[in-house]
Image (cartoon, rainbow, N blue to C red; front, side, top):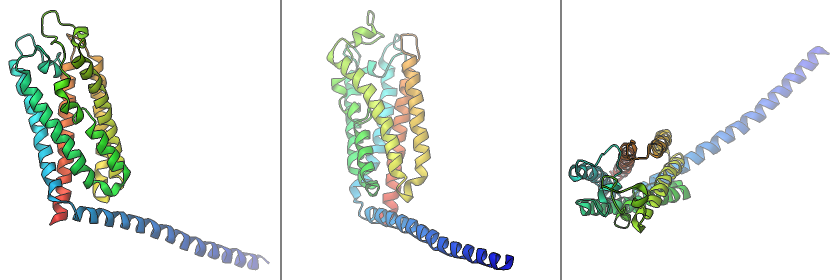
Length: 270
């Protein structure tokens, strides 16, 4: 009786394993087919990437270099009362700032280049990821490094904190000051959101998956810098320093993203 029961148990176990094996095999095959289809879609899209995508990626890298160089250079003519540690970049193109036209022109051009790259280069490069690519590109375009820089001419503070008698309240007393305060805050939020959405889009693309974790950590770094910027506001604080770190980190991130697009589109075209 024991022998027969063990034989029956063994037979049932074999049946179960034989039934489970095909099911597991089918699931693995479905996953492999899905990954293969995603890779084929990405390869087809990459093979159709026009030269414009690569040109705009190069333009975006150059724009970020110009952006950083311009606000580093502009500090040289702000006078002895201006502090790069305590005063913001926006102070350097305020209504009362010397040589404000230089930064207005540079920032506007860099913002236009970033917008152009985001919509006509980054979005096509990530298109196989679907709607997430479009949403991420739109958020980056609306961020402080895209639309925010493009509208610099309309975001001029009423005065600089380095000017005698100027206060934070007086800075925001005109339309430009209010616009700068609002668009800067919303622009940083949009930039962080863009990073997380683009990371989700990259997760769907085999050639971009190695970027997912670094991009998320990068977004977390920007959040930390933004919090430090908010906590150190004031004439004797370090808000100017943290704002510059945000600007440098953002420009570096966009330049690296453009390099990623350039490498992938370049390899696909060869």
